Amino acid sequence: MSARFRVVIIGAGYAGVMAANRLAGSKQLSESVRVTVVNPVADFIERIRLHEVAAGSRTSAAVPMGTVLNQRADLIEDTAVKIDPINRRVHFSSGRAPLSYDALLYSVGSTQAATAPVGAYGVANAESAAHLQTRLSKLEEGARVSIIGGGLTSIELSAEIAEKYPGLQVRLISRGAVADTLSASGRHAVRRRLAALGVEMMDNTGVQTCDKWSIRTSGGDTLPSDCTIWAAGFGVPALARDSGLPTDAEGRLVVDESLSCPQYPDIFGAGDAVRIPDSVAGHLRMSCAAALPLGAHAADSIIARLRNQAPAPVSAGFVVKCISLGRHSGLIQTVTADDRPRSLVVRGRLGGMAKEQICRMTLGWIRGELRRSGSYKWAKGPLPTAAG
Ligand SMILES: Cc1cc2nc3c(=O)[nH]c(=O)nc-3n(C[C@H](O)[C@H](O)[C@H](O)COP(=O)(O)OP(=O)(O)OC[C@H]3O[C@@H](n4cnc5c(N)ncnc54)[C@H](O)[C@@H]3O)c2cc1C
Image (cartoon, rainbow, N blue to C red):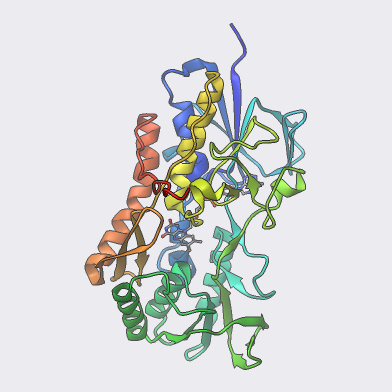
């Protein structure tokens, strides 16, 4: 019997687990492929719920890996510290023997941004969300909480904290205008809800530094702040860069339109940690809404490679932006495939219920792929314009 084709997936988040399920459950590949997933912990972290953990609305975002990952995929609980693309091996922080691969999927997700002021709290991963939760629970009535960022994560976080801790003074500080990627009615609904929760919104204000008790704006003002939280974008792990793989300025692994790395065609990438050409992914933002289709497509590209076929370019687009505004309200903003807001929004309690359903559906899609490989379908990206 010929040796099995070894696929190693680094990172068991939305992209990695989706890809693992598609590959490990594929009937056509059957016994010919061995899938090994590397992740620091044996839980799947529902990152899209970390603002709930940070505010104390839920105790954990961890889901046992066995309930989302195909049991035919092996799980190694460890952290990859180096990828050796010449000898096709992965090295680990624990010092265990390096793991050889025939194809590698790089899906390590994102982390707290390097641009975040030193001393700021964050919600990028389970540890930082738990750390923030501890800090918030110790603040006294009237203490000031400053959240930096005007995008979806910072809006969700400020609403969650303001609702859970009505005694705190919550302030949302945005370099541009809060919620400026939404339609006029969506923006209005979000701002009205935040104001009703007592969140102070400071538009057009950059933050330069912070310490334990204050923040300094780029305009030179010093504002009191007992807890400052960075939620204005994520960075990525340094693994690709540290391994000498081709990366962009932010450290994202550079892949081609089919999600394979041009210099090392055995290496594929999906999710927040990769840089895909603008021709097919210029509209994609870091999101689980993008990570799921990218993970599925990366698996399809690996399958194509195995069959000596040319992998297809990826096509993925958005349908909605969905925002929780505390536990009882939310906003669904319909968008074009390239993420521009349409006029239709669903707001209030109904918006909150829809958002919760969508959060549940993300796990539902991953588990659907576990039950039947190839079952996950997604919205395609925008059609290329005539101008190219
Ligand atoms: C509070 C919050 C709310 C959000 N809300 C939404 C939302 O409503 N909608 C939406 O679309 N997106 C949302 N996002 C963004 C979304 O969570 C991410 O874009 C998504 O998780 C990216 O998926 P991924 O598979 O690329 O990476 P991740 O889900 O981050 O998974 C990466 C995995 O790789 C592991 N890993 C990292 N380094 C290594 C290593 N060296 N070795 C082994 N394993 C490693 C990590 O531990 C992790 O398990 C939110 C994010 C946050 C923080």
